[in-house]
Amino acid sequence: MTDTVIEGLPGNIARSILAGFDRHFTIFSKITNGARKRFENADWEAERIASRDRIMFYDIRVKDAIRDLHKLFDLDQFNDSLWFDVKREYVQLIQNHQQPELSETFYNSVFCALFHRDYFDNDYIFVRSIVSTEFIESDKPSYHVYYPAKRGFRSSIRQVLVDSGFKLPFENLDRDVRNITQALIRETFDRPRRAHLNFQFQVISSVFYRNKAAYIIGKCINADKEIPFAIPILNDEQGYLYVDAILIGSRRLSRLFEFSYVYFMVDHPVPSSIVSFLRELMPSRSKVDLYSAIGLHKQGKTVFYRDFLHHLKYSEDELILAPGIKGMVMAVFTLPSYPYVFKVIRDYFPPPKKVTRQQVLNKYHLVKQHDRVGRMSDILEYSHVALPLKRFAPDLLDDLYDTCANSISEEGDYLVIKHLFIERRMTPLNIAVKRADDTYLDHLMRAYGRAIKELAGANIFPGDLLLKNFGVTGQGQGRVVFYDYDEICYLTECNFRKIPQPRYPEDEMAAEPWYSIDAMDVFPEQFATFLFVEDRTRKAFLKYHSDLLNADFWVQKQKNIKAGIYEDVFPYPQKIRFNRSG
Image (cartoon, rainbow, N blue to C red; front, side, top):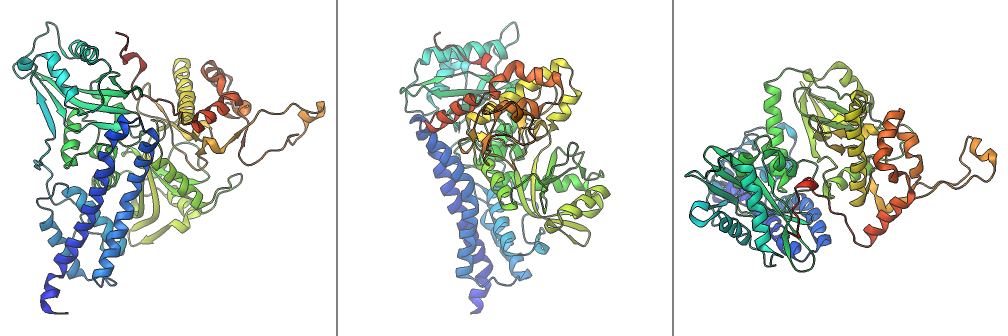
């Protein structure tokens, strides 16, 4: 090899990795850009497939990039000076890139797949981000501005809808404009209602697509008030679009971007600009939440890990066993000062659990790729995570060594976990129920049953419906979300049955059932007996959801799914939906 080739080697490696990222982002953008056509064609099955495929493509593209590197270069052994120079060259290449933060993450993914974690420091990977994402220019603006004082209020709203770029016509554009205008005026103007000099709408230039809806997202600015809003648009599947509602305020928008929903499709060459705009609308939502919400979950993982390392440095509390009933499949722990839980698959599962480790992994991946309909927690998945040994509580360490020894090892002052799942921390439903007064219990049981029904409508059966496998988000009137996935399956895989009538009086007294039971058999009429110990909990549940105890309910759900009928689940309350007959 000549000296010239050697001198150019770091740059060539850097260019090869960046080419791999650019290829990935081009494919990602192509899938995302197809969301409008799928929405206008009401091709919901194609949208589900695209959403699933887009999640999987990142790892495929990383493997492609590594394969290309091995074809072009001899990388069998780590060379510290070479990779120091590769990173330096890579930084130069992405200085004017439109997705510098994403390209850093892709570089990390490639490097970490090639080499041992001993080299995972800022000399060789992007532990800290290098390139600023502020003020990145692109041909497509991040947002459009509308001035009602100049154009007129209704004309401005009309233009917002027209500029969304749909080819399908609106069913009744005048009605939709009127509904939006009335709601915005009612919610955003104090009395006396007065438009100030700076009165304007700022609207993100890209439409957000998810499930069966498209969302126009922006904010209204009037004096010192900034009011976020989102306008959901639906397809009537008869060739027309209509505005279903307007979500006003940070709280409503935050619900739209909750971690329990599938990722949005939103196409823009500078994702960081979209995230920055969204953070202004929802200060309570972190970059982790927002990058993940727009489908860039790997970037969400990167931001999370940086934030977590920073938090560890500036905190002193111990990692402890998570409150609640110990799981048989997962060891679950948490850092009280940090709003997440960490899950490690145990080495063995005691009876009656019959799943294997690989089956558990498959089920968690199923959730990642499936429509979570606001009822399943998103998952961050990491490999070879090093955490300071001194931060582990003694009883947690004992539990990990007793039941997860194959997944952990000590390296100096660190405990390295081979495979780790991280989820948002919630209050276990069984604990919330135990603490609840009658009014709050009523809310919890109503929400619990709704969660089960909405999951069923999306072709998901939790398998184990025990309250401990569900959590309550936030404070006050929180939402009930499922988070324990080791027995999850597609609803259509289950065989819902009614318990046969006993043949003889003695059958009911026998220790064993008088009827055969196959692996996928489910008997809904037994739910109330097994799920609720206390009468008051059972009564609160049956007040709203006695239909869940009927096998016919579940069989009908299966028929709907097999017929291609997927139920609508709206991430906003029924009461704010517009009346289409107006």
